[in-house]
Image 1 (cartoon, rainbow, N blue to C red):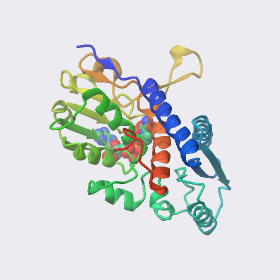
Image 2: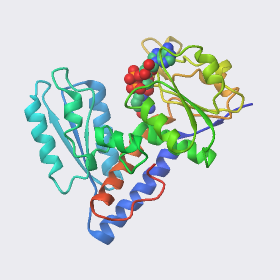
Image 3: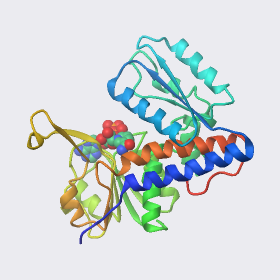
Length: 300
Ligand code: NAD
């Protein structure tokens, strides 16, 4: 079998289009502009790139973008004060604190200080609890993007066997919860799982979120399964020239694509969907804050 390539770039453009249409309606019909605030503490180069591109895309879909940059040695009290200010700002509907934070700051404390209604990353303990009990919540962006792609490809996921490799709070656990809420039979595999190849071979849906380059080979994949590769790993690529690098996922793309029914590439799969879902969550948060109908298809 040669897999269908699930084009995350194209899908994300579609989601951004839907978000943009909804933003226009909110502005024209209700005089409301959704606003997203991103807080960045310190000078981590990767975080700076993410924050810049989030701000750019936010403005492109017509939303208000606010960036709050703070020094690496910012105190917990000063950071909490900024979050409190944003919590109370009626023009801000989504707040995201870029992770990782410098070591002296308590990440859990900071995340749980964001108003749950504005927690567009979906990491607040209240949102984790709401998702876990199948209630309306803010859903973490990366797993939400994976779910959208799976629903788009399969329609109903009910009764399918899903294996999520990785149990992080950001990807693995919420992904498993979303699949369970969609009536999959879910296995969460991790670094201590026995016979991982056999566990993965049972799956109709495989979501790999490990952070190990090309760890899943094609012979772990059941014929016709759908493979969602969350991993982003940078490897040296001397074949492209001296000092050049390339991005690969957690699955070995060629061998998995030869057996899967559908597969996401890296780059161009899950990655672009993550930012699109951040925008979707901001519009959802804005609608909920104003008691308005939420956009269809942009939430779990
Ligand atoms: P993490 O390090 O927090 O978690 C990795 C998980 O993999 C752990 O639960 C661990 O138990 C499991 N694991 C480690 N070694 C394993 C092994 N040999 N066999 C089975 N399981 C094993 O990572 P994370 O934050 O969940 O991210 C995972 C990957 O996804 C990374 O490559 C990250 O860069 C990527 N990521 C991508 C996006 C995106 O937008 N596409 C977003 C978040 C994370």
